[in-house]
Structure formats: structure tokens, C-alpha cells
Amino acid sequence: MTGFLVDTHRIDAGDHDRYLAFLRERTIPMMRRAGLRLVSCLATLPDLGEDVSVQTTWAFDDHVAFNEIRKNLVFDPDWWGCAGEARAMWKGGERRFFYPTGIEGPGEGIS
Amino acid sequence: MLRRFEMFVVRPDADPAAVAQMRRRTAVSGDFIPEVLDSAVGTGRVGAASYYVWEHAYASPESYRRYMVHPYHANVIDRYLLVDSPERLIAEDELDGAGLFGYVCDRPNYRLPAGAWRRLILLDLAPGDEVERGMRALAATQSATTESATTESATTESPGSAPIFSNLEANHMGACWMDAETFLTQPRWSHVWELGFATQAHAAAWDAESALMRAVRADGWPAATDGTVLGAFDVGYQVESA
Image (tube, rainbow over all chains, first blue to last red; front, side):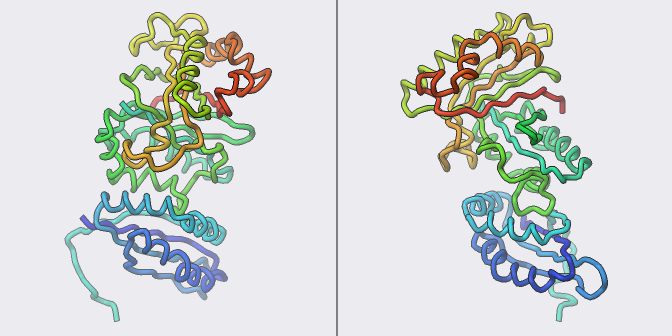
């Protein structure tokens, strides 16, 4: 069963552009290299007078595949380096795995 | 059987409630992953840092591999540990490479009741089978176990300072952490010497009486073992129930 790794990071609004650039240039290529597929990368607005939440959603085939992905990450020096640099911008966050519910709406609402 | 440990320094700024949750949820892993046996936790100190130990076991490499792909592992255990998790509660490696280690054993003689004391001495042995045999023999002379060293008798009533058990084995799980069979990495510590004591006082008495430990304190591991042990990482903690 396909699984979805959903990381939500809270960052300072002032770090919005820098953090998204970091994701684009460093984290996303590294995670893809390990075998994860990027489903979405969404962020709250940076001009609302509050911290920004950045949510990345990754897909993987099943937990057998994820076990291999985890091994690939552990052996990638960039995983350790990226995490260290990103953590300096994190103010909090959450990691959860999600799974299909059978309720589908592919592409609905996306334009 | 596969005896396995994970040991980490908790971030000093970690939320105590989150740490308590991590301890509870790793301790009860066996309730969710049937392959996880003898799950318990403990806390100790290395210098100023507090470290957290999750001790457990598996019946076989096949059991271990089922643990590795179980959703509870990725969903819950990894949440607190993985370096890129926003909910990571542990610090960078401050335990000199002693994060994940363990060994192969024939039977679960390591079982201790809550409140007992476990000592883990991770050894960096000089290479060679003869060296390993020599260290095993040396350890055996220092750790004649109590006559009734069975799982059932591992109670706080054990007499004297002798360990309830003493296992010195190669750090198989440090090397074969992916599937318990494939050597992936050379672990920092080549061997694990696990000892169990009825109480911390028993462990302290053994430490004081052991000729090896006295020599180690005086001269260090290499000199005390004629170069057999190049270095060691030595911790102890009270076993807590899940």
C-alpha cells in the first residue's frame, strides 16, 4: 500500500524564501535520490504576522520500499548535512505517515 | 536470538513530556510489533549528558526484518530518532558511536526484572580470533555468574556481587543493522560485554572486586588487557519496566 511521509516544519516568516530555496536545491534532490517521490510542497503565507508552516509530502510504495529508502538516506552524507542545516531554521514541526482512505479526488481543486 | 540496543543522548532542550512519550512508546513496541521481545528502557548519564537506552531482542533475523518494515517502526520509533524528523528528540552522536549495537545469543539469559542493574561495556578489540578468545576467557574469570543464573531466578535476591549473567559477543547488530545478516558497516565497537546484576549495589561491588576493573581504572583498557582491548565505552543503568 502506498504510503505518504508528511513533514510539517514551522519556520520564521523571515526564513520563508531561504527555506524554500534550501528545499528546492538541497533537500528535495537528496530525498528523490533515496527513492522518495515528491507529491507536494506547500507553505502558509509569510505575511500574516505569524510563523510559516511548510509541508512536504512524499510518496513511497510500501514499508518494504521505505526501509530501503531509509538505508539510502543513512548512507547519504548529504542527508546528515541537510538535516543539520535545515534544523537551524526549524522552530517546530511534526512528522506523520498517511495512507489512502479510499476517498479519492485526484487533481480536484488544483489549477 | 538477536540481542539489540539503541542508546541516545536526549537533547537538553527536549520537551520532557515528549521525552516521556518517546520512552513509553519505544518501551511498549512489543505490544505493536510482536517480533520485538524483552523490550525495556533505562536511563543513565555520561558526563553531563543523560542517555536513553532501549533494550530488546528478536527471535531470528527473519523476525528482525519484519520489525524493520513494520509501520510502527517508521511511524513512531523513527519519529523521535531520525536526523531529518522535525520531532527528533535526540542529540547528535555524543556516545562515541554507541548508538545501535547488539549480538547473537543462544537463549535469553539477559532477562532482568525491573529495578535490576545492567552494565554494558562496548569493546574495541584488537583484530584476530585469538584475541577474541583471550578476551572471552578474561571476561569469564571476572564474571563467574551466580549458581542460579536463570531467567526465573534473576531477582533482587541474588547473593553477592557476582553478575547474574555475563555475555561477551561480537557487535553483530552494529554491523548488520539492516537485516541482521548483511555486514553493512564496521561498527565503532567490535564487541559487546553485557552483564546483569541484581542491584546497582551489586554491580558496584563487582566493579570494586574485579581485578580486571581495578586494573582498567589504574592503567586503562589497553594496558590492563595487554593490548587486547584498544578502547571501551562503559555504561550502566537500572532496568525499567515497560
